[in-house]
Image (cartoon, rainbow, N blue to C red):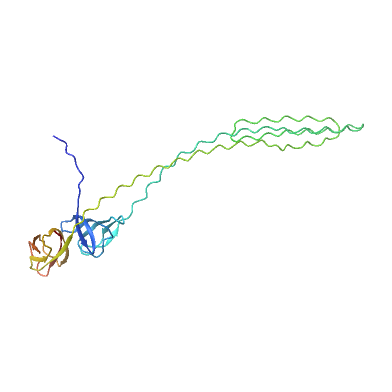
Length: 275
């Protein structure tokens, strides 16, 4: 037995004009009220014929509205927008730069020898020469720079002048390069826009039944065919009934299986496709 493949369901919909706005209707409820439809503008308020919480999509402004009013007077409220998408992941941290080289050690110069003193008491002992400066430690280096050598002790005599301090400083090791920032992930593609349904040349005829009436007629274009209808007005509590519609020439005839009842009435708006 060959395998059965499920296919997508294509719903063309029925065109309606309500309150001067054209709709493409794809679903009615069991009372003939609109449940789902599309339009190219905001649906009008205070219009009958829409089920409570009916949904209309504005395909131009890309908005969705729901009927928060009643079946006899619509009130359209825009659906709230969805939450903001999650933040993309942070790129990896760049690798640490290389350790700078150790600076060189510079030894201070030895002070000059003092002049010979005249014969007499023994002169004071000369000052010990300055100890050489220790070179600076390179950045993040684990190798200690060598210690400068001890200066030579001067001979006995007049105190020699103090040797000049070294001004040379070992160079600072270079800073390691910063690693590159991780790339941001790509944005997902936008889904395609749904196709627009076909347009028909239509006309609308109203049939109003009051109290004991079970048959009403209205004028229409020759060759028109009935596409659908909806209840647009009620008086009191009309009795439940089915509506049968026929077209003969330029006359649309509607027959109810039960009259509305004393003091009650019901109005239907019938949509026909012109020949």
